Image (spheres, rainbow, N blue to C red):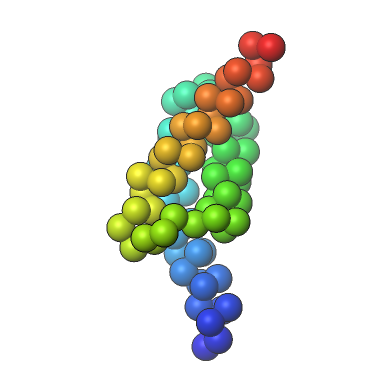
Amino acid sequence: MSAAMSAAASAEDLFVQHQQMVWGVGYRILGSAADADDLVQDTFVKFLERPPDDVSSAVRPWLIRVAVNRARDGLRLRKS
């Protein structure tokens, strides 16, 4: 297995493992299933672009922080 395939497999595993948690954060903040779906995608795109330094132990808090920040940004955009 190549390094690129291994990285893709581990990214997919992380997505499957944390998708529902990120969706739940988004739904509770934004109040919309469609917005929560978009938040999940945005959060994991951000993860793929710039993952945390310590992927093994810092993934969950990092994903929560990014999801909350992006949800807040979404709420701010609604108000303006």
